[in-house]
Amino acid sequence: MRFSLSCLAAALIAAPALAQTSLPPPIASAAGERPDPPPEEEMATDGRAGWVVDAESGCWLWAANPLPELAVTWSGSCPEGPAEGQGRGEWRFPLAGQPAVERFEAPFRNGRAHGRGIHEYATGDRYEGEFRDGQHHGEGTLETAAGDRYTGEFHEGVAQGQGRFTWADGSRYEGGFREGLFHGQGVFSWAGGNRYEGAFREGFAHGEGEYFHTSQGWFRGEWERGCFRGEDGRTAWVGRDAEDCD
Image (cartoon, rainbow, N blue to C red; front, side, top):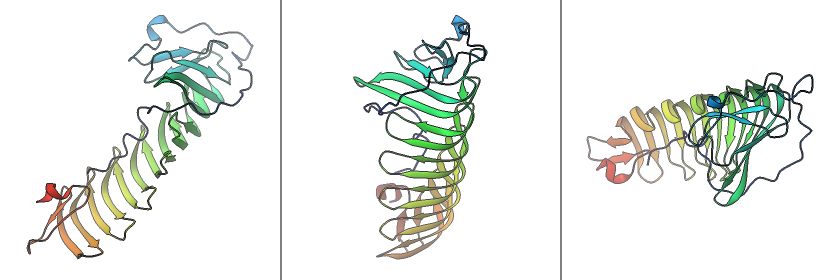
């Protein structure tokens, strides 16, 4: 099995809508005027990123991955059309026959979250941290509805840099990430007491490392894509299935 974080902040999974709260009345612009709509060719369509307009205020929000029957609301200002400044943006859509909502509460720039804020998913997952152009970017924490938690650096929506991922069962990885995968030096500690410390590459133990197994002891040396093959015939695996290392 390959460990990956890249899907944690990707497509929404079918789930009932989050409980909704009342919003302050939207402000179309500093002068209270409704902005003109965006050009037709820049509007979001199924499968094409673009603008979606708040039906009440006329404010524009950017939809990177628009879904059918998508509707938006914006609680802040939009002097020139796109949402600007502090506010709450909501993307509402039907999902698996249920109404769903995805919510950002953050500063916005050009219709996208930009700065420090909160992103709540329809699945119950929750991100709190830094945004850039609508994506998780910088320092942040992503918690899943299942109880898993990642805290660390993000780059354009995925874990990249240094971080710590903790599973609901107590297992934990701390170290380097690249494109959502374990990469660089890190430590993986299993809830049952097993532990690997060393090099990772593209999600696998790869390079120099040492692995302690509670019943089989130490495996020290060179690893290749999650597999250890000792000169004495002993094998071990990290991030792979046993049959992959035969």
